[in-house]
Length: 153
Image (cartoon, rainbow, N blue to C red; front, side, top):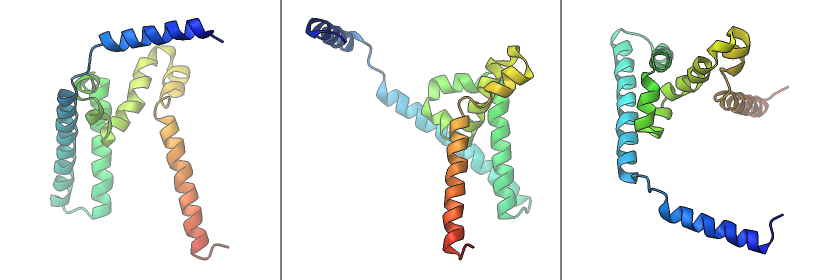
């Protein structure tokens, strides 16, 4: 446990650090996040409209659009484009479904040297795993409550 003098030194250091650290360009970051996120969503809308023109039903269109966007996110992560995009766009690149694909493929690519089982298989869900678990548990609880409200047992 730091004593009073150490706490004062830590606080003085933190104050000095906060004065000299560079300030992030907030407006520029917001612009790029909005622009890139919007362009990804426009691409998704274009894909959806294309499938609708082909005469697919609404459920099939939703599934096909999701599959195409996940594929594109994974593909561009695999060739190194999505990570570069993420450096510039920040949150604009992680919010759409393509960001989810990126969060699965990026760790798999990083650990591929460790093999298929202990590298790719074990590390693929490092980032996305908690999201999947939370989503599945939430869906189960919601479905169970819905089932009970419908008469249940």
